[in-house]
Amino acid sequence: MEERQRLSGEFFARDGITVARELLGKILVHETKLGIVRGVITETESYMGEEDKGAHTYGGRRTQRTEPMYHQGGTSYVYLIYGMYSCMNIAAMTEGIPQAVLLRKVEPADEQSRERMERLRLEGAKGRQNISTIRKHLADGPGKLCIAMGITRKDNDIDMVESPSFYVTEGMEVLEEQIKAGKRIGIDYAEEAADYLWRFYL
Image 1: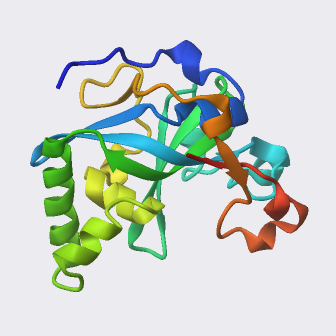
Image 2 (image 1 turned 180 degrees about the horizontal axis):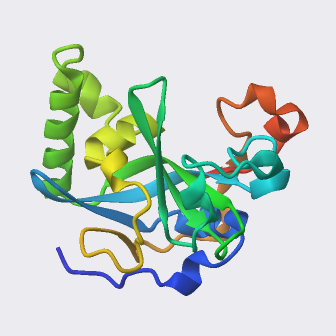
């Protein structure tokens, strides 16, 4: 597949809503044990820092876990949910401003990536799912996305602007009218912030 231009630090050094919307259609690239996997980003969520009750950094929580959110835009933030599934985020803004974008869904960018994603999902399923189910829901959720892209906690706190094996490139053109917005998923505890339309998808 033709190598596309990587996204720069300037792309990520903007507010989390802008970055979340403009990541749609871009291609997430990750070097896995099976080789390079490329996924077109089709769903994202914005987490807007210390004032956002849905964000891990709400109220200024700066811990070992949340530290990557405080790093420069383009830093990966990979954390565990339920003690077993990874979630992939990319920090937005600049050093010290803890905004981030959760990647919720990708589609294989090419046939080789599709095959590798299916193999990675099959390995992760350990017999609990068959290939037809996996193909139908290949990377349509944060946990499934990470399994299909081979992303683990080892990929946390990576500078995705400079990394040779984990980064984002230009992808397909997305028109403004193609972008839909909705409530973020799984943050019912976040009071009024649970109703913000900060989830974006194609």
